[in-house]
Length: 244
Image (cartoon, rainbow, N blue to C red; front, side):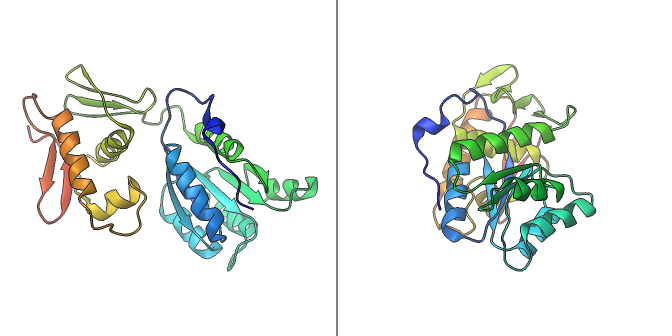
């Protein structure tokens, strides 16, 4: 059953948000599509796979803040997937989703290595709250929350951006774009990477959406300052670096 989401469910959240990378491992296409869309609307970056084998591979290969794992999956069930992640010393927090909601079922899931367990059907507001709590728990105190390149600074917690001490107002998508660029400062970021990690597209929409947002972002962080930080690499993508 796909839970319903309405605007009221998201009220009462903190005024700032730490953007998380979330992997949803769910074989029901309708449920998975709903979760990806809703998590994106809540400000997070979510990827999705629909079987346990692919989920294990993705979880091992990428750095996610939280995994949302359906218990009943093809190829490899959710509990064995989690157990193998723990055996491989992968400590990413896991929220288990399951239609099996009895006490014994929840205990089994937690003992398999899950950090939280949510029975279906559920309200998205509760799932979101649980995911964000797990994300906060998993962030070590010394984790980087402020990115800086030259005199440009981005604070992930307060969601504020400054250059040379001047506060720069960004739209949510611009903030996510700059955060990704600053996290990968000095590295050429391709169009495909931006579509997947910032827009959560796993296909090319054949539009100039990236060019438009990059132009707007460049106007805000570079215009009026001594030297540009956001550069276009022809035929490759973009890079944020200080050439000074």
